[in-house]
Amino acid sequence: MSPIDPRTHDELPPTAGLPARLRDFLPPWRGGFAAQAAAWLDTDWALLTCSGTAALWIALDALKTLAPERHSVVIPAYTCPLVAEAVLRAGLRPRLCDTAPGHFDLDTQALAGLCDADTLAVLPTHMGGRVVDVGAAQTIAARVGAFVIEDAAQAFGARAPTSTGALASVGLRGDVGFFSYSVGKGLTLYEGGLLIARDARVRAALELSERRLVHGGAGWNLRRAIELLGYALLYRPRTLGLVYGAPLRRALDRGDVIAAVGDRPRHDIPLHRVGRLRQSVGRRELARYRAHLAVGHAHAAARAAALAALPGVRVMRDMPGAIGVWPYLLLELPDVATRDAALRLLWRRGLGVTRLFAHALPDYPQLRGRIESAALPHARAFAARTLTLGNSAWLDDMRFEIVRTTLQGVLAQTGCAQRDCHGAASAGHGTPAASASPSQASAESGGGG
Image 1 (cartoon, rainbow, N blue to C red):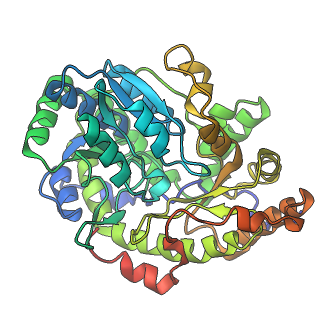
Image 2 (spheres, rainbow, N blue to C red):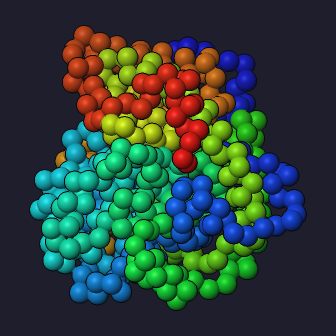
């Protein structure tokens, strides 16, 4: 195993969050973050929430008022467990859709079988900033009169082609789209979310639900402001070992994968308004965000190509014509044994390697008995074969090479180098945005949001 460099006390983040600056906290403190974010996305309406989970809860509550006879929501079986919690908290029934083979996107055949007259909404997901084509979900949902909610929690700034060929923000093709501004998803308010919609009736319903469900929050705003200040102080390699690396390794020592990943489901979803201080920090971060995305595109282009060249490694890509964002690279390995061997060598080393989610949704103990269980072979296989590599600017070439050569060695030991793994695991799901040159990626990210 390649030795790590002497800076062993450094810890790289598992995602490429935009670092906050202390001067972001200086007065004057201006609100209006939602309007500024809407303009940045080239739309004329947005609604700020205290988290992405809260945004989904509010969206579902609003859509219930427009179709009160419907009670179920179709969600991917491989997604953040807080999605299921939001559906339950809204008083609705989650219906789990298996994913496409070797992917996190909804399997269209399974989706068609799940949608019926009781379906309120379908949630295609732009996971990890990778843009999926929501067209199939829209077609299937339209057949039964259901809404489409685009889960763009990890994709603020990603753009997809419209019917005219122009690029527009993800979240605007469905009936509702939502983003998250929690730690690690790019721009952060420490916690925060944003709802967007095109239809005036849906916008009015969202505003009514937000006013009915959300009240005050002075205590929460104080807590989040302190946490956001801590993020500004500690989100750097020299200090992340204290707040991220040490808890991660303690969780791995006791075999608690859910805690190590940090995706434990929780039923208590806070609902409160976002204060002016955090909105002001967000406005200042937004001024730097486009440049941050350009750096991420450039790094991802080179690194995705290098990793995809390894036999058996598949790097998840965007749909054709789309330009995603790159908080991390999501990799699928040939089998669970190879993935686990790679994690044993890399997860503890402070290189930004981790798992996206611990399990497919039915396999979280906290959700058993509260959501349906099914075979879901593709979602479970995807959960068992994937890992992520943070796309932080702090992942320099030397550290990236440690990750690449470690994966190369694991693949050789498991025999993948002698099998036709590369052909079996090649991209196959859209045109890879990361195959663009770094200069092209930087130029593409410069317009439209």
